[in-house]
Length: 409
Image (cartoon, rainbow, N blue to C red; front, side, top):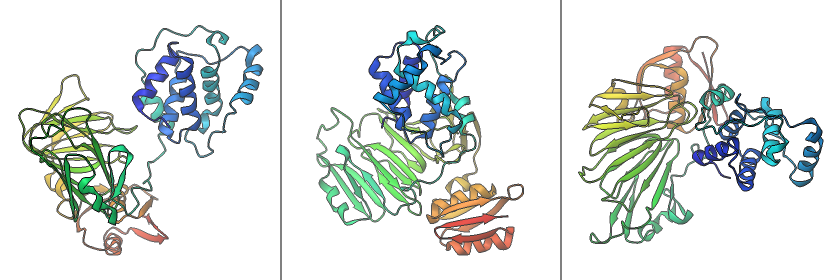
């Protein structure tokens, strides 16, 4: 199923400005019909819900349209737990719009819409929906996705095949680290298409990657990183979801870009560096991302017309807006020092941190105003020891229910 955001945006715009082909309208209809991605579903519905367009076909053709749809391509009912259940009738109208000739509509369509401003509508549709941990995040495999749709579990016996997995590149794996080097320093493998690998670290695990250019990346639990493996001397573009610490190899002749993925909660942006040390925390189920600079200099693009520059000991916090401030360096580095660092941290955020580290689902049922914690706790302690400490110090009650922990205050 297609879920590329930019492509879907393009299809929506072409359908609204009357330039879409019949095939493109069919593709968008099938995305809405079959997608399991509720953000995509909501985006499509929200786009057609804008005031610039009315989706009311004339009454004289409505019955014929419904009969044709039932015969040629019956519509599967929208899922009962869908976040856009309230828009069932509207979604049906979108289907009709995508399936029938435009001259059936009473009102002329507006001029081309040059930009879709959907954030407000999508946020309104999904505002009460929280992003839960996926099966991969709660799994016990560290997955490495290779080229040509191959995958390897780095904790399993098949990891031995890595050495010769990619032509002209030597991959070594030991303990919790993987490294990439050229088999022949004179090899011109950089020409042609960039080859990417993706590593996915589940909850309760950490992993380190030494990239082809010598950069070292330490990945926290619940993190995914997509990175090039055959561009040691060219610009490198990496894509991060989760938290990672970067020690970037210095190079004056190329750019090193980390794309911090966004969602309905926070904006996507790019961290650009030449050679430096910084930490990015950008978990998909948190409301904001935070980039902290330790050494060197970085710039942030995608948030303003002119890139923003960040100095050492500063951090940039991004949601639908952004703030640059002095960084709490101890808090930013705590995970690498094997410590939970809670500095006036709300209990719902604490539960997410514990969930990622111990690999067990947490549910926080608050009865009052959210409690905030002030504590430093070793990550070497067992989950029960940590919960007992929270219970004694902050009067937090907990209960184990199978593979889930219920917190109440």
